[in-house]
Image (tube, rainbow, N blue to C red; front, side):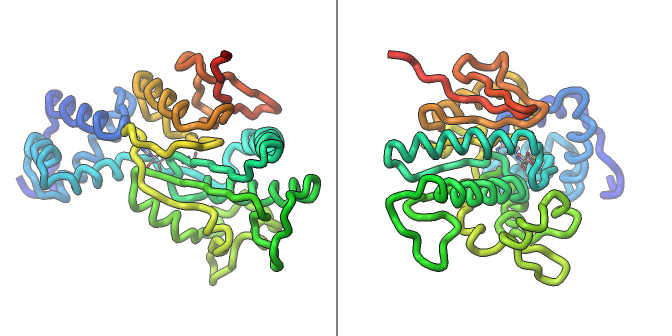
Amino acid sequence: MSISETAALTEAELKLLQTLVYQECGMYFDGRRTPFLEDRLQRRLKECRLESFYSYYRLLTSREGKKELSLLVENLTVNETSFFRNKAQLDLFQRDVLDELLRRKQDRHNYSLRIWSAGCSTGQEPYTIAMQVADTLTYHNLRRPAPCESPIPKPLVPAPWRLEILASDINYSVLRAAQEGSYGERQMAAVDYGCRLRYFDKVGERYVVKKNLKELVHFDFHNLKTEYLPRHNDVIFCRNVMMYFDQAEQKRLVEKFYRCLNPHGYVFVGHAESLLGLTEKFHMVHRNSGTAYQRVEESR
Ligand SMILES: C[S@@+](CC[C@H](N)C(=O)[O-])C[C@H]1O[C@@H](n2cnc3c(N)ncnc32)[C@H](O)[C@@H]1O
């Protein structure tokens, strides 16, 4: 077979590869999405110069095939994202959830806040969260000053508050782009001029996230299929990720989120996603078209 021809993919080979991808990262390709899977498999097969999908499967399951398996997974992820995506939900986060969290924490003299953006793609989501939290903390500090003076020039996060935003993905190339934090005019469409001025440097035609905002976000590789996920979060954003998993995998993920959250913590999922029917361990908070889910605590 010449490399310009496409190899035939049998039902049995498709099943094997579908199962392998599911076991590796939780992504489930139902009938509607198999043409996409087939297309990506054809591309990888050509790239590896292999003649059959069975030999490709053998490669993926071998010790030498680890790198190819992660490349295949990268090719299968959908990385669409944007700044201030789902504004109604972000308003709920900023106006209600953050406000409640900051008050609750300050009453207990606990000044640390930890937020996880799980499936962060090219970084627009965690940088949006960082802008929102930085703005809110400044405003909160004006109304309820903490017993501590911030140095001059004032940092984005006023003392004694500590903010950690962890942003993770399974795809190394989007993580590299996120870490770079450089965006074109079209990607900046939803970022207003105030935010552009405060949080971005204009470099040629691009907008680059300022160092002090970047420092609030820590990017890392995490596969949501695994058990070892970051714990002690106050809020988890996992938006437009679960929709690629089947229901069994979604249930397992929601259980993990429960364990990864601090008591009374919140989860935000995508507009087309829901925790209803997956768990009894969260209750829904819905305000002005925005939805979040709060961890329910066992009463003693
Ligand atoms: C559609 S993007 C969503 C980006 C952002 N959360 C948003 O809503 O704008 C989905 C992201 O989830 C990531 N993803 C898919 N499966 C994953 C897994 N098993 N573990 C971690 N990230 C995963 C993909 O690589 C992709 O970047």
